[in-house]
Length: 352
Image (cartoon, rainbow, N blue to C red; front, top):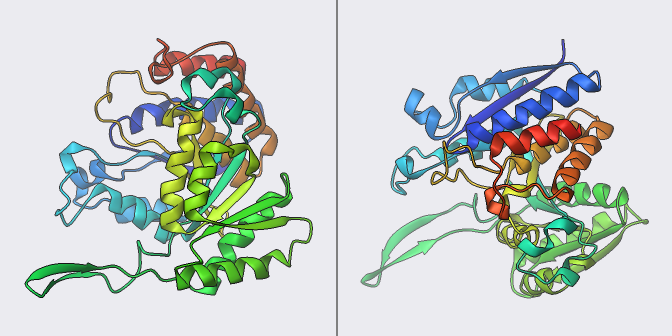
């Protein structure tokens, strides 16, 4: 019996890019003699329509018994009511919690052949190869209390930012392990000049650094990091930060590559199972037209092989195939080209 992989197509262009990634996944696994078993489940808006839940019990249980999960995208105008009690995004949040996934990895490595599609000058992109590690289950998105209340004839809202040293330690330690296998530099981003939670973050990161003498740690405030990310992105190796800062900065970093359609992500915890997905959304405006860029999802398959299946060589083959396709000048619409989803997928498979 092979590695069990749960496919969650989701909404919008999710089914299209997951179908493309499935072809690459099956091809690479067969070539390298890696037995796999694929199972498809519902999540997000599609799951709400079918069951009333964004994360049906059947989906969560299948994922909990899997070796890896590949997700397309969730959400769309049909379910875009911020006051609704059930929303597609709850499926993703519930899945992260249910699988104990506390760290989101986003590699950013602009391809030289695509320098013309990035808003940054080509010289600023030279040598950029970084990984963001974003804490995923703590911080202000999950803090309690949170409420709205009447106040002096008006209204006020309260959100709470909270971290424990244990939550910080585990995600920072993961960042150091990654850096030890790369260029040996960790940048920890916080707002320690203002926030008590950030002072705990900085203190804990410094303590973890003592466990990794071969890795250099630098601390940086989030506002200066936002500027440095576009002025000298090549100076970063592994960047680790808390949930909200990471949410914002990783979208900023995505601009370096010129298209959200190119970038993968991995959400990891202490167990082997990981959640892999492109960073783009469901793009309902192009859904069903066969023009979605699947390369971010295919690159997520490479991360799946590397982190959940322990097949680093297979991951490198997929990444080299993507690089080769782009070097050949093949482009989807978001990159200024004319190839559709199927055509660019076939080109990757031919490279494999």
